[in-house]
Image (cartoon, rainbow, N blue to C red; front, side, top):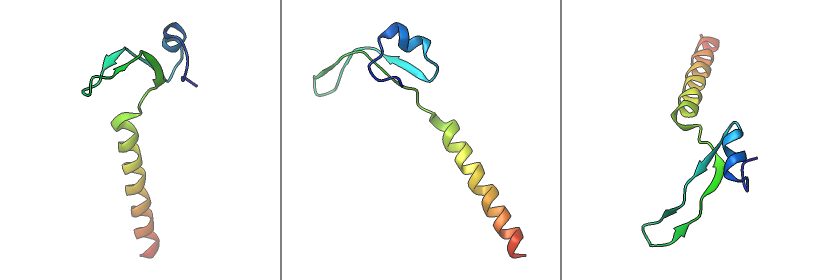
Length: 63
């Protein structure tokens, strides 16, 4: 779990990433914090591939 980890521990944890302090467009400052890394497109692509495989298997089963 990444939430609440200091920057050093966050960097050492696999699956965690440090977000530096920044200012939002509404002027509010956000403190630096540790968060879970995004799976990004890779996760979406894997889901799409699995869906395509399932659809192909269903099509074969109906034939």
